[in-house]
Image (cartoon, rainbow, N blue to C red; front, side, top):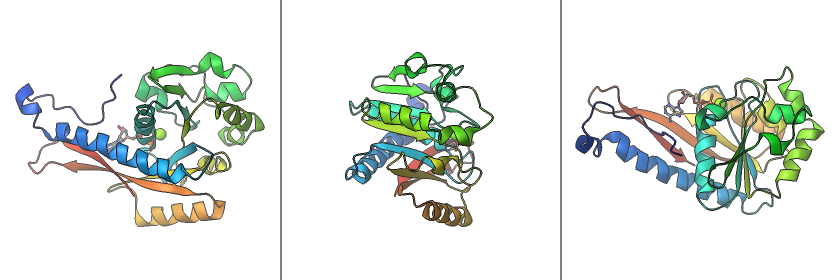
Length: 238
Ligand SMILES: Nc1ncnc2c1ncn2[C@@H]1O[C@H](COP(=O)(O)OP(=O)(O)O)[C@@H](O)[C@H]1O
Ligand SMILES: [Mg+2]
């Protein structure tokens, strides 16, 4: 399965397309994710816990996109990876991977289904996906319920890495509710969107919650010099 990372250059002839910005950026994106993967692995190396969450301050900054791409990147190393959509308010992982979301995490916690019945196995080799399930009236309660904790603890033996996509911490506290389950958080910052104030608030929230930031991923969109509407995405890890 191919995940579209950059914008496709629809109008260009194939020979021109090979030199286009989006083609170059694809390589850059893949390399950036490899670098992010190495840094996250390094940050996790001292910890037995290989579960981490991806979050950001506001909505639309690229949490789901980054979670999905990190999950793909980790699965390429022949490790068993589970991506869990813990955004029980505006879930998006199922759209990115084009899988059903009639049942998922919320339904397991609500004791309506079992993990085995709803997990999407090997969406790409080594990558399983657990979608959000039905949007519940009480997402925060579900994420701190003993049943959720038990589910994830049980799954941690089955997977080398478990990645949580989460809602924005500037809007709801859901992500920080996961702090005792995860080794830490990867924070997404988006160019021309995340402000200094957002970063300050993010750092304060993490400090108050006594939870660990594994690193930051900066997501940006740079326009080409010719006033084209084509752009390319790039990612950096600090
Ligand atoms: N690096 C990027 N540059 C430009 N647009 C992006 C980038 N990453 C994601 N997007 C787009 O931004 C929107 C929000 O991304 P998403 O990952 O769903 O954010 P979040 O999960 O933080 O709400 C989507 O339409 C996605 O395609
Ligand atoms: Mg999202």
